[in-house]
Image 1 (cartoon, rainbow, N blue to C red):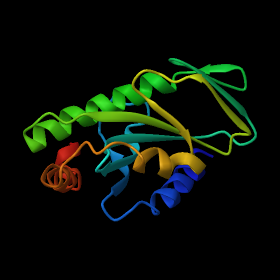
Image 2 (image 1 turned 30 degrees about the vertical axis):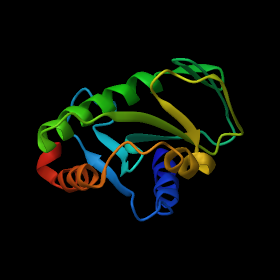
Image 3 (image 1 turned 120 degrees about the vertical axis):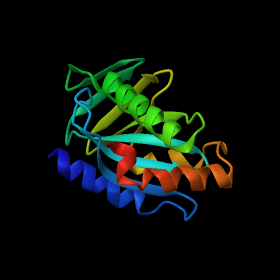
Length: 161
């Protein structure tokens, strides 16, 4: 079921404007990563995002700060997304040679309802249907040379080992 959510988000990311890049299923080789890989890494003028797809068909999702509940069960999604974003920030910063900020993002797929009482301070929460707007409406954060450098190193397998 998780793979179906990741594939749905990947299909949505195919609709990003040309200035944006999306990489999928990046193996981190990191024992601290909840899954060992990133679902999606998105790089564009609005920044760098680690996107975790969460497929919960027919379920109700409630977000209040750092708390995420799915069908009334607490989920550790925020902490996991933050860990992955920090890992990516460290590796990209080392490879590019300058500090890179990475925003964790959680995208809910198939949920009947997603209620965000108030969002977490540093993590983007959205649905698949709102994902492209959530990314492309962000203020420009990366100039063209930095964007090109980040995409280049992100595509190298050695960056993730």
